[in-house]
Amino acid sequence: MDPVVESWGDILGPQALDLALLGAFMAFALVGFFRKSVRLKYATLVAAVGYMGFWKSRLVSVVDLFAVADLSLPIFKYSLPTYLLWVFAIGSTILWGRLYCGRICAFGALTQLMDPVVPRKMRVEIPVRIEKHANLIKYGLLVGVLAYFLVTRDVSVYRYVEPFWMFGLFGTTGMWIGLAVLLLATVFVRNLYCRFLCPVGAALGLLSNLTVFRIKRWSECSTCKICEKTCEWGAIRGPKIIASECVRCDDCERLYLDQQKCPHWIILRRKGNMFVSTPAR
Ligand code: SF4
Ligand code: SF4
Image 1: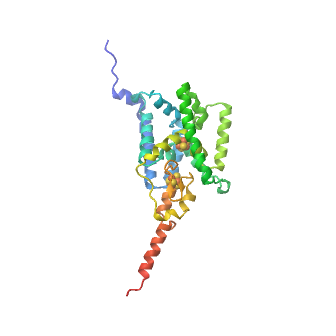
Image 2: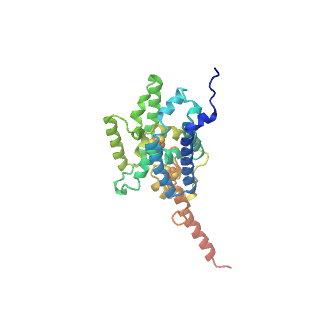
Image 3: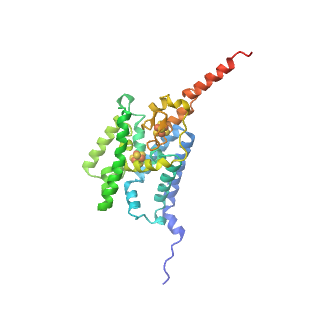
């Protein structure tokens, strides 16, 4: 009997809808990103929670990093949506920075959706000197879980470092309590998990040191603090944007382009007026 030959139609058929929806979601996220639109950004975040989180439970996880470290990658032709997500996460980070964290990750989207709801006065601002050190915890966790996995081959450790499993609605009572504490802490400290604890965020943060298209700065940024105060990720320190902490949320870029608020434009306008009002000799 002839062996059954699998056609690309047989392979693509069961994955087609998934691929199309994932591709459409990513394209939508990119449109919002390029248009610097607040409304499209929030629509993307809602879709990330609903579609990527509760419906598909599809997130880049330390389990994926384990698969890379272990050279046990899923079979390409049967896992096309997974590879599409990986290519987007890595490719967009190299091109623009942690766009995956800022738009695609369902947990990051969930915590960002808390921002417009939680009153500002409840927020605790972390001083830069503490933030600088707290940022490093996630890198320690990344190294720790990778080392633990390579020694024990125990994949289940992901449950203790990632709250993503909530989207699959499984877990122990202890884990649900841990998640509740984490979300409660996020009410007071914005994006707490993503900024300080997420090993995947740490891996993408390392990769973002290669980012090609970075956010530009004006010369006035060295003294102006408006963007620094606006950044909810603690990614702006003086004139510098810390690429590994920036998730390309657009908040500073919208200010940067705002001719009414950004001192760069205000100073330019004043110079222009002075020039115009200088009496001709
Ligand atoms: S830091 Fe982690 S949890 Fe936060 S958005 Fe990035 S991958 Fe998701
Ligand atoms: S405000 Fe600017 S620096 Fe901060 S995370 Fe958003 S895009 Fe990055």
